[in-house]
Image (tube, rainbow, N blue to C red; front, side):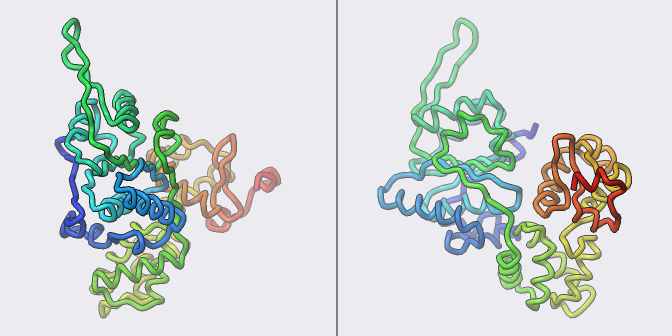
Length: 347
């Protein structure tokens, strides 16, 4: 478990928003207003309504839960909320809060209206999670002091704060915790048009020369994820500087991404290895996750969290009660055909 001393919570005031994590590309590229946030229209509209209402009532925001795959903007949205509310955002993550005392320290140091952002909130230990219930509802927390006959409960009153939780696995949250969030909103993968506009914006901020064809090439290989798109922009910039005139055009972007073994579908080397092994070794499936993880020499958690969501979303793989099954689109990627009529029926 991660030691809280290694990753202490970070407080970011609205005035310091643009200066947070100075020098880190990701923070430079983050918008600081909801109207500047590309994509996720439904989530942005919901948050805009909540922010406008809270400001008009001069009250803190209600608690918010953001879910979805990594890299889609959950942390960015929490920082934007702090900026819009002119409040401090305290950033931490679930694994860091490993005992009730850690949570008590965070909560008692908050001011009225502050936002507490907990990333990967589903990884908060259950013993700590129970303390969140009264903190979220009644703005108080009961802490046990000492042990044995000398043990006693001390009630701490908390300022009215907003808890913003982020999770990649909303199903792992307990029902009591999930029900205490006023708004639960899921972030989905971005469409190509939105992702292309994000790539263009990133290039302009980083002062990287580009063509529209070059931005389009990066966007269509970014797996619908802004974080991946920004990472690819950085590599394509480096490639263009070293191999050409520094301009990211279609040819340079394509060559750079082929060097990373990311094809025109956005599939990387491990994605294609998964599809190939399913086709060659297991006749397209069904095959279990643990079996597949051993076959490709990768952790099951990595396959389930990083690779499988995109493969399923794009229709290369399907889930069945017996395991993962290669779809017709997946067979096309590996350049093979189903081996028997039974597989055709599954497809």
